[in-house]
Amino acid sequence: MKKLFSILLMLLLMIGMMSGCSLIVKEVHYKKIAEDLNQKKMDKILYAVDGYANYDQTFFIVTTYKVNGKKKEEKNKINISGIYNTNDNTAIGTGQKSYEMTDNPETSKERMVKDNKQPSFNLKYLNNQYINIKTKEPVDVQFTFDKLQGIEKLKPDHYEYGLDEPPFVNYALNEKEFNEIINDDLKIKYDKFKDASISISLSEDKNKLYIDNISVGADWERYINNKQVEYSLVNDIYPSHDNKTAFKEFKLKEEKAFGN
Image (cartoon, rainbow, N blue to C red; front, side):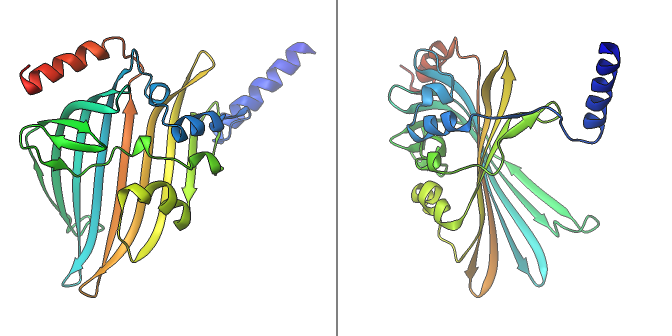
């Protein structure tokens, strides 16, 4: 009887995996993560060691519009690799900007892409602003991840996972929530709000969940010279799970950037 039960259980598991549905469903305890974000507990969010943590950030805005009836798409992107100091909410690292122009992005035959990647540069995050260390000019990127106050009041629309699905939490924001939680810092001007979301990807190791990625996204429209312009924003952070040498790396980067 036990053997028959084991065979039936294996068959059910195989059917579930083949159909894309998990028979073992767990729930992410999202409230603890939301509370850490709301209270700006960056030590826990970034897995800091002695107050220092490595991270990667990707930020881009896609602008879509029409010229003579043909669609054009511009993508302004910046990649940042940095070390965050949770003791005073500063960071130091390198950034690289890139620009991409695509003609007819929806038509594969007529699609044309022109891209331009600029040299990397040293930057500092201070007083809620990235600064190019060499030019002293501000870098137009927000470190949004310590500015998500109010997220603990929301219930995510997805927070379950199973054998075939990694742990994942997603918040779909309405316009009011977007303005209260995200746009209070970004100050985006728009004529029509489309959608916004906060997504948290996790991994599980020894029954403990670790944040792999936090993604903030938004879509909106503006009317410029009576023409409709669509915008899409994505702001991603990828915390490192190993920060044993982050303090040493921070000091080395600081010495190299400032020549101390």
